[in-house]
Image (cartoon, rainbow, N blue to C red):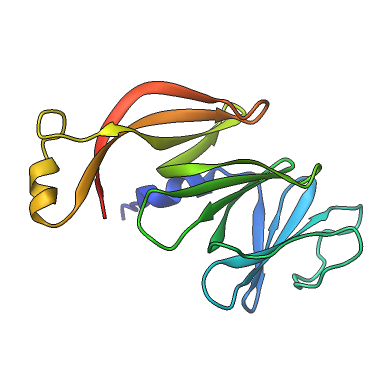
Length: 182
């Protein structure tokens, strides 16, 4: 029997965390932090980031803020993407791509990056690869643009970029693609 893994699941398979769920609450355990996610009333999740201490492994997955926790209340339909060291990586939005990519430094308790992105994403080389709009699509640079316009959609040219975790600078790659826009 041959198994096919959908491409949108591949980036998650390589992430260095584990997830446990209790009811509607989900815990994402990294090396130094546990992130507890609870669905928000409308869309997205609320998050509690808790620094891990010896003996914390195996604790129940409960959304309950404790002294020293860092709580992030849902603002724009944020969803968990990854926990990379002390970086919490979130997706924000309810519409089709592009959506917002948000990175929080849990040690400093500050947002260190926020900008539109498209997937798929992958974490590698101490950073995250994803796609960003780099230009407008025309009939000359995007074969599908005319078809999408007839369907009531727009189109954009995107470039694959890499965001380094050390300095949060974007490095543009050479790969480009044409994508539909709603």
